[in-house]
View 1 (cartoon, rainbow, N blue to C red):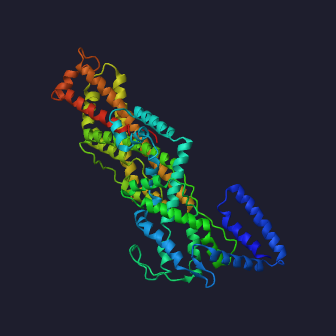
View 2 (spheres, rainbow, N blue to C red; view 1 turned 90 degrees about the vertical axis):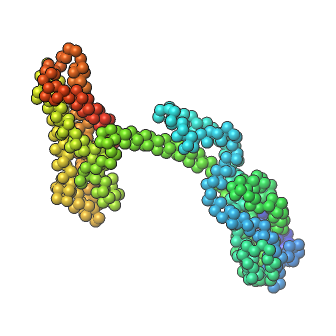
View 3 (spheres, one colour; view 1 turned 135 degrees about the horizontal axis):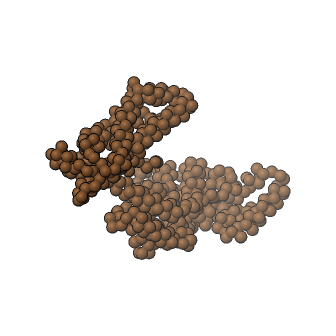
Length: 533
């Protein structure tokens, strides 16, 4: 086999990575035929063929203008270290400035929003939490939701296929840049000069030749990131974005252009690939460039949509909480109401350890118990007794409605107390729940039984809340009619108002108004909780 044939083989391998796709495919086919031809005429000896190829690679390295490796001594030369040191001194500071850039959501946002028009940025800003809250002050929930929906549609429309492609390409260019910047140049260079201090860019290194085996893996790693570097990409635009991100230049633009030029020349010469092939004794080694393929626009839009929805939900919750606290003040004069002994948030801790919701109606049950004990059985009962016992009604229908509703609420009051007591340490339900909790650690069936018990407990609590609300509405409506009758001339519903006035020191009208107002506010409070979940 002639030396010219080996030279042709090496030349084919050297230029292959730089050819367009169609030419590269044709070249690869030629290489296959060359290898078959060489294999046949080398006496079916692959090892002999490999040795010949490596010999030719050694010749090629000697001809290189880049004096990076000496095949005779199998040493990597100081010239190779200088190539990497020139890169390191330029981009070394950027390694610190861009330490967490690859995971930075701020940087993603900058890259995306740099491509948007001013009007599109305005739409995006109008979807911030601050803007949504300001908007919520001037419109109802339905109008707010529709307004925000329209803004989201407008924002999504700004990202057509071409813009999405452009943004993703810019971000992937950033990933290529970061991969190149964060290559461990110091680790490689220290092998040539053990005294090299890290990030000392004015230090004058004293590089010595070293065994090529020490840096083979480093060169592969470098080519993996450098293989994706393309001089034709819009690097200046990327550097401008990074300057906005760090509020200072991360790499000198002129020096970066010099790096791009030098890397391109080294890549074109294929000297690093040849070094790897010779050191590893693998004449067929090919560079595997790391080419990122990230898609960031969908995540960006999804995040804005999610944050918008969460902000609306937060506003709804805050409004609800504000209304509840206002009603609590009107009914009880305080927002801190705690009357239940066992159906409590404190006891929910043991259920949360089993990943269970536990008692689900703690707040309304506390409010209901406090209202029934503090007001219903006292002030409200006193007024209703005056109407039902002392009052003479022109129709029994309305007095019977008031009586039935009143006694239904009284019955719920007793049920509620018994219900709470049954959940105590000595109560039947409390004992059953605690036993089920113990068994749940080792028995899946016990877990299901515990869930079923909790479901029944919560259903009973809700039934009391709903029942109290329904009957209090009846009581409240009847009292409203009674007040209207008192103020009406002639009075037609209750025929002996004068007698009732005398028995209450003429306080019945004010007491009716006070009781009605208390019931009215409490019904509004319960209605936040009396709807099935």
